[in-house]
Structures are given as C-alpha cells and as structure tokens.
Length: 132
Image (cartoon, rainbow, N blue to C red; front, top):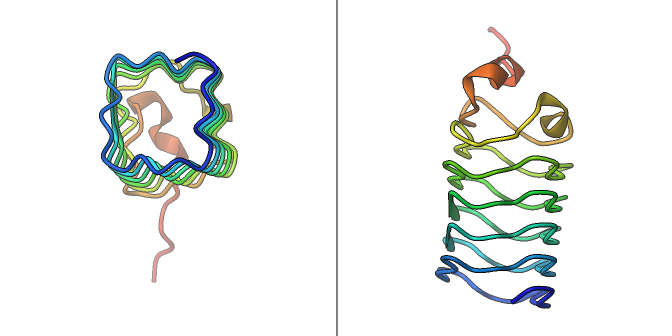
C-alpha cells in the first residue's frame, strides 16, 4: 500500500498490523483507536490526523509528518520516531516511554504535559505546573 491516498479517511478502530504505508497520504484521516503493530509508515503524511488512543507497537514512523495531529492518549511502545515531524502535535497523555530515535528538538514544537510518558532521557522536558 505504498503511496496510498487515504486523506480524510474514516478508519476508527482499524487494525493496520504489518501495513506498509510508506509515503501514504493520511492527511486529516480519523484513525482513533486504530492499531498499528509492526507497521511501516516511512515518510507518511499524517498532518492533522486524529490518532487519539491509537496503538503503534514496534512501528516505524521514520520521517513521518504528524504536524498538527491529535495523538492524545496514544501508545507508541517500541516505535521508531527518528526525524518524525511533531510540530504542533498534541501529545498529552501519550505513551512515548519506549520509543526509539526521539529527540528533544522534535518535542520543542509539540504539546506535552505531565501525563505524557517520555523516555527517561527526555523527562526534563515535561512542564511543571505552577505552584499555588
């Protein structure tokens, strides 16, 4: 399914295990609660996608564009995120604790909070709530 065009597609709860979605256009797709096990999303366009509570287990998002995506509550356990664009991506409550290739620079334009689970080396990036 390389270079497939699924922009705006409604794929809530879809099971996309072992999917080869390299260069796929999933711009604005609704993938809420979708499961991606060992999926390849190399250079996929997921801008503005709804990925709330999606599960990415051992999947590759190398170079994928998640600009403006809503990834709240998702689990990216063991996934590869090197060079993934997370600009304006909502990562609140997302499990990123075991991802591979994630850098502090990638998270600078993303929205995270104290419910975002980060790898140990990036924990200092979690904003501390103001004291009252």
